[in-house]
Amino acid sequence: MTVTQLVTHSGGFHADELMSSVILTQLFPQADLLRTRDAELLTPAAGRIIYDVGRDFDAEAQIFDHHQRPNPLREDGQPFSSFGLIWAHYGRAYLAAMGVPEADVDAIHTSFDTKFVLPIDLLDNGAMEPSVAGPLSILTLPSLLGSLKPVFDDPSPTADDDAFHAALPIARSFIEAFVQNLAAKYRAQDLVMNAIADAGDSAILELPMGMPYRSALEKAEADHILFVVNPRGGDWTLNGIKLSNDTFEQRADLPAAWAGLTDAALEDASGVKGAKFCHNARFIAVADTRDAILEMAKIAVEEAK
Image (tube, rainbow, N blue to C red; front, side, top):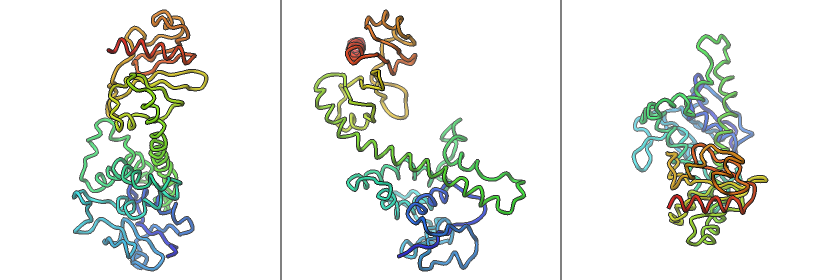
């Protein structure tokens, strides 16, 4: 079926239909994107996808609303917004269009749904309070996208539509970056798993470049690895491993005596010629050669143990 119209509601916008528009305009770039309350345009028809409006959810008829009762729910009982409905129906095709390898599509579809789509669904339905983000609630993505709406006294009759279309590429950049980072993690996984095997019982994991590694460490249950080293430009880095994305706590910190030191001061404190920098929070250090960074890593392991 050729899609010629993407139809959502006019007026103020929210993150769910904005994000849905990102997915649909990527898949159907030739279709007209219409923001309207015209009942005729909100009626299912050939070549038309309707979302976040229409008081019905019928994927076969290409209408994806969630405001009706009963509202569409996930298998676990959590509510969908239009974004969740569009992602469930079109997300895999979107990932394929973004160049995600076929073997990774299902896993990335699920991961993106859990980490990115579901929070927007819950917030849009009032099933999660913005206050869960604490002082950062105003900086969540839905809040930031909402801040792009026109001010209340903007006199332009097209203010809402203009703001929506200005916000669309911003929303697109976040979705594309998130997907690309998820895809990169899957690409990195084989490289990291091979490096873990090469490391054996060592507490130091050496990688050929900077790359995502924590999920592979967890998958391999490589709890014995405390630090990661890799080249970065002309230098080498020594990195701690966070326990999770929700904390700055690490499996092991770099030595306290190195904290905040650079160059000669760090060489003196560590006893390693070529040591260049250690962050005050003790999660990363830099040296000018591989030999120097490995020597620093061995000292860090000894102190941690």
